[in-house]
Length: 251
Ligand SMILES: [Zn+2]
Image 1 (cartoon, rainbow, N blue to C red):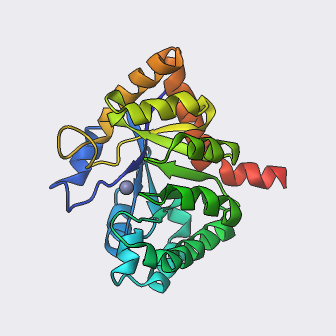
Image 2: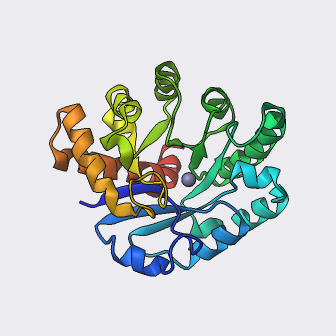
Image 3: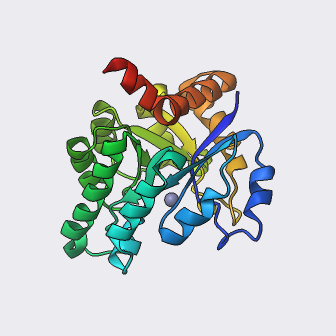
């Protein structure tokens, strides 16, 4: 059974040789998430047995001139190549609250496209955690993965109740916030991620650091490492690999 990195950015702007990074992370099944027209296109070439691709639009890029229509077109053109729409989201850390209506308009268009093709969504929520937890259940008819969620406990509980998934970054080894998330979230709604190249003591981070998270999650949940690893891979498959098929069988 393989490890899972459900959110990473293995882009040329961070790694001189992305192929080599993937080659060095053979034990990890990864989801590389694009953020704009350039990275969405670039990561297509990286697809392989243990590498899935998601295409999205970072909320800040959309406020800074990235055209939503162009992104929607690009995603639709490549819909059979991707397992999810992401990274998408709301961000009130790098942008002001005045931009929120525009950000909501953007994410709603992206989620509608994901709904149309029954692709799960991978969502960023920096300093807009409440807004994401309230909005997404209203607009998404597909699984929602909250990546690197920094909201408070009550919001996490709301998200869990709404059936959302949460991916925990490798810095759970020392972050008490993420350790609390692991305690609250049922193992069936948990995933591991790295957000490479970020969020690790060394820069650039790589998907291999998810191994540390598995150890920590096992410790917190009082489970065997292998059982955690297996459950997280099953969660990944349920969300990204079999979601469409399940839907077809159920309907
Ligand atoms: Zn990210």
